[in-house]
Image 1 (cartoon, helix red, strand yellow):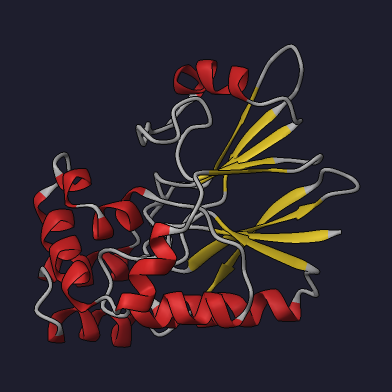
Image 2 (image 1 turned 180 degrees about the vertical axis):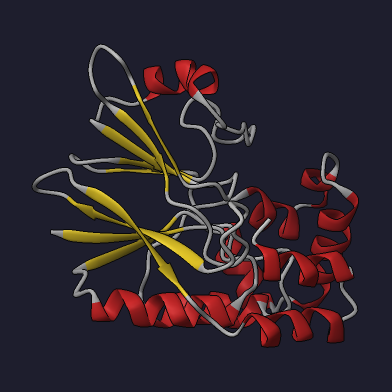
Length: 226
């Protein structure tokens, strides 16, 4: 089965729509979202509604949690905090209920799925490199764990077993200096994985951020993918 894995949409409906169109063209049989769905971008409700309408299972991310739980905003950067405060004010009651109902992890025979690190999913620990991955490998039994959170596509392998931790990149706010939306495709039968990059209307997404009164930096970074 060909599985598409998306993550870190961050209220960017234009990137999400482009990615879903790409997934359809790629004939993926299934899709899972590792979130964050909201934060940073100007269209959080639309992104939630689109995922619901497409029946895409979603996990819980730190921005999603912060949008509905003020206590989870304490460690955020200033721009992230301002964006999540705005997001919490514009979210519909239906969107809030949806976010409150999301789980932290999902597991199948082929793979483990989480937003941050499998060993500390609620602490929102970041995995940037091999050292960060040491404890993460102990937290799942499958041959591969897919995650997001850093917005940086990367594959980390466990030396002895060959098991992998794979960051699928970000749909709505890439940070690897490629501004195109990013998602992953996993062949569950063979274990093969690759990333897909998708162009979208960055100027429109940025203009909506500015029009919403969100920090201009959140619009500017979309152009450069950082």
